[in-house]
Length: 380
Image 1 (spheres, rainbow, N blue to C red):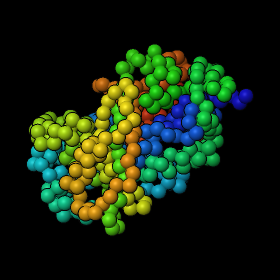
Image 2: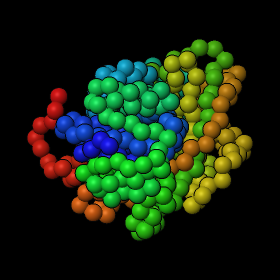
Image 3: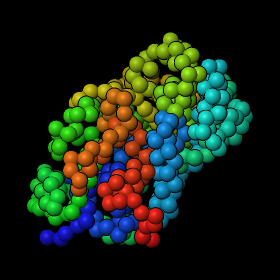
Image 4: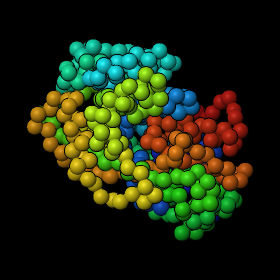
């Protein structure tokens, strides 16, 4: 029975990020996951590493750091960066006030307001009347989640010597012994990254944060003829939902207008994100519905609301839908994450918002520093 410095339960992006941060310190790491491969939120999302629009404060700061790490990891792990940057196309005059206010904050550093013509230089299929006002950010990168997560896993094993034990559910975490359905693992410390599973491990600790689950619907849209988007695309609905914009006082008028004119979209938690894949198709979403156990069924009406916004913003006649899927992630009122400390040698880390892929590498460095102590350098 091998002994490890750190056992991580959960092989989603948050677990992988903690494995990297620990391995860089020379720690011997094992990652345990109940599934045969990562199958949760990490592989079902946009692969859109988003900085601009994240909630002001530590969320935004950790997203900036995570984006830097993502760039390094992508290059070393052979992950293609498919898009760089973001164009948020807006049509309402109230949106211009939000964009102007955002650009005056520290979060607007490096970003710029664009005209419709300038926005169309990045995304030619933007409708002019949907991009009367536009925000450009250079900070974002986009990878294909379905392939990126397995490539990060392989790279951690090959370069950093991280051991992965898939198909092995953790049943008890009490270092130096980690119990799984397949046996015992010895590890001095442990980090539990359970995603939206609040009952398998430490349920009494989890319940203190009153977590629930968010269900979202996403689609793959295929254009009738080849097109190229240089950046990801968002719209006014994003200004009304992403807290980096929506928490600004100037956003109140916009949210009031959106509530009046797009009441169904707002009631279903819809905002538009469009990212392009290597084959030219688009990952499009998404919606947000909350429940302790969301039902597994997709709604055509919700998909249609997402596509209505897609068609309002983009001119792609003849586009078709080739895939639909459901994702879920953890959510909690009034917080975007929590780190719990059951003991000196155990941490529970959960992202309770849809920004796990955008913040995980930053969160992981923070957790590892807390668990093992701060240090000025890391192993190369």
